[in-house]
Length: 208
Image 1: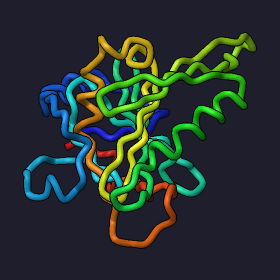
Image 2: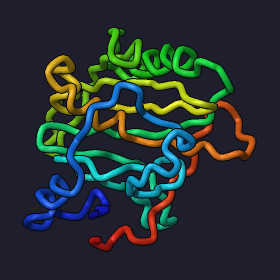
Image 3: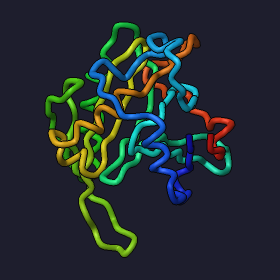
């Protein structure tokens, strides 16, 4: 399995090999808590708080701070879009997503964009439009779709970009990919809303 930093280029044949390694599956009950998948025999990239199996037609990319070596973002990338995700500490039996969703919408508005709500696979989502500046200085609007999934003392927040952001009803395969992510909360006490730590795997540059 190939783990690539976001600034690395793909090598010929790598994405085909990844697709053959693990056929994509659809599972409406995921994302999973690590306790739900123990002993299932599935090989996953261990990033600390999130574990990700090889998913057909999706490449796992890590954005790493070169100075600290810390992973800043985890992303599944494909030919028509991407899904960036992160896990956060949450209260037991709580609904952190309902608490933070209005805050995200307000932040979008404050930054010159806007967000509307829709009902999706995991409940209420945010459909967002944010103005961005291209490298050539011109402006554009970047669409995204933000999803929050409450788990066992954790919340997984995911942002879809590209086609899955603008055509959610036609890109269920992206939701199937997100449903295969596993979250490891750990036992340490953490403030509600604090990001769970993500680490670069030891074999990040190795093909196996």
